[in-house]
Amino acid sequence: MSKAGLAGMQLATQDIINVARGLSADEWATESAARGWTVHDVVSHAGNLIGVVLDAVNGQLVTPDGMGIEALNDMQVEAKRGQDPMESVTFLEEQLAKAVPAFAPLQDEPYASTEAELLDLGSYPLHAIVDMFTFDFTTHLRYDILVPRGPIKRDLEPLDEAHLTPSVSWLVGGIPKMQRDLPKSLEGPIGLVLTGPSARAVLLNPVDAGIVVEEIDGHDRSALATVISPTTDFLAWSTTRLPWREHVTIEGDGFVATKFLDALNLT
Figure 1 (tube, one colour):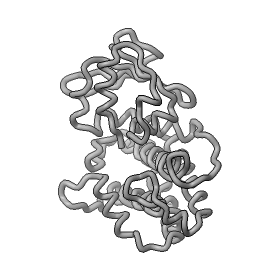
Figure 2 (tube, rainbow, N blue to C red; figure 1 turned 135 degrees about the vertical axis):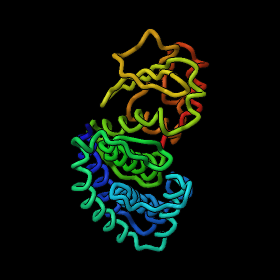
Figure 3 (tube, helix red, strand yellow; figure 1 turned 45 degrees about the horizontal axis):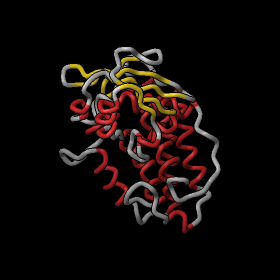
Figure 4 (tube, rainbow, N blue to C red; figure 1 turned 60 degrees about the vertical axis):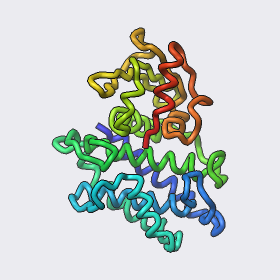
């Protein structure tokens, strides 16, 4: 289960709140590294996303037919562009206060393993929802708002296991689900070895037009190629925020690994 994700979600949300409360008017209006969004937009998105998932869990989410998560995010951000920035912070605090008691029961059975559709992201066990928030908020803050990729300079502690374990779990769990055509780019087994805090190693195997993720101990001899990366970098290059070529080491068949990595774009 993902009780670590519940703690990670609270930490990642509070990180955004702490930074946001110290922003100047000019910093709020600065373009973030999230294309088309200002820093204010990114903070608004955090509160909006909690609201979307709360509605979904409660059976109250209504979206236009066929609308994906990215389009929904943009629509909600656009609707709040005229909101006072501090109202966005207060809204995020209020949403977090609602989310913790709502999502805590989802970490235990019978709810934890119940699958739920998250729009076009695929179907996930309910306990993983908090992992998504940990990943989304951590990545938006560290790679879209703050330097070196974002525009705002603030000193934060390096990412630790409390942030990284749920984030990595969400991304690895999303590899078989988030991109319908991704299996076409996987020509054979590839090892993914993540190092540093929350180190993890998995084998990605093409099976029946899909991808099966299997936990392994380090390198696996059946892998045609092995991709090695620090966990912190994985958050950025697997979402195409940073170029994977500058942040991974490939052992084995470079062609097979390159074809897959060029296609990978998690959310």
